[in-house]
Amino acid sequence: MTPPRLLTLSDAAEVCGTTKKALERRAERGTLAVEWRGGVRMVEVSELVRVGLVDAGADVAAPVPGSSIERPLAVLARRVAEADADLAEMRAALVATEAALRRAREEARTLRSRLARQSASPDLLAETA
Image (cartoon, rainbow, N blue to C red):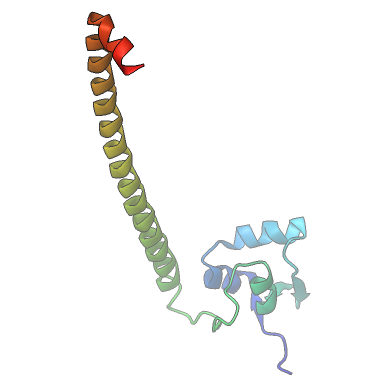
């Protein structure tokens, strides 16, 4: 059995793509289990997995100095890609909705014109009934 892997809240925040303050708030609310080691709050990687901040099976390593800017940029790039995919879905839904609206308007025009012709000629109503 491997020993629990611990990260400082700062390192955990960097790994999760969130802020240290967000993790501190979770700890204060009791939704994230942390432990004190030498006056420093630490969190187990398994706890980050449990609360859904890290994917199960993900290879989590403590950030190395100098990479602190790379991880947030990767998180932002992933969020932008997700937002772009959502936008593409919304655009496709908008196109489909506009097409359905055009069809409904055309059908309404057709029905109005048929109703106008039938109102002008009451004999047509008796024939269709």
